[in-house]
Length: 282
Image 1 (cartoon, helix red, strand yellow):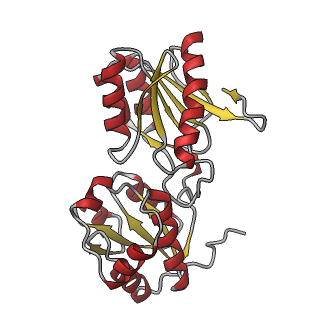
Image 2 (cartoon, rainbow, N blue to C red; image 1 turned 45 degrees about the vertical axis):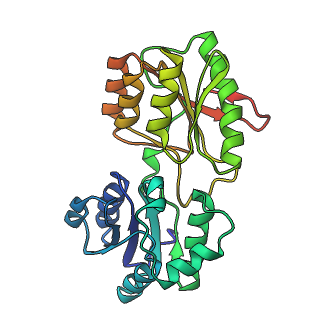
Image 3 (cartoon, rainbow, N blue to C red; image 1 turned 90 degrees about the horizontal axis):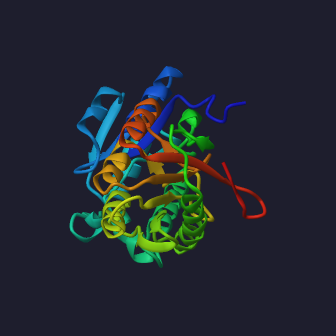
């Protein structure tokens, strides 16, 4: 039985990007109402088109989020979309509940903050569901998606970079690394994937390999690795050659357009599965 079968309303705590909008459309197809809590300066105004109820908050206003969800009798919610990490230094306007949470967490990295937010919501009777609910078909597939295939050297770079990405993920630093000739060119940190690709790609000159994986203890409820057309734009700008993504544990937006754009840019795209023994398969 679907765990949401008896739920009439789904709450979406939305960041930026298209994920909240896609999710909202799928929820409405199931006959349920969508209550969206959007973040000023991050979320798209177009969310109004897919929301049965829409509320706007500033980054850090956890008390308002709880207030609006309870006001709408929402007991199940998802955390979707991106928040510009650099905004935590310049555009956070916490209310009392948000400030209390901020002061309690030991680490202010993505995973720690999101887990803390989820725990606070669940204390209020609001269960946080998996971000892929209703949208399993956007999980990154296994295999080579493009006409071009990775060379033997590029496959070695993927293996090398994979281990680095896992280690940085374990430290909750980032989910993406850029390598070439088994040398680390860039590690994603607070600047985000696209900026890391441009920084690393500019150092590698051409044919850099971009690897994006989940964190070792990834919470499937939020912050899954995601790639889309903007990822390819960043790679094309620096003439990066390969994008390797963890299959089944990352999101792929606009799949058909994405593959067409990758082929046009002559970028190899491959979905990798890590086996139980630590080896990689595609």
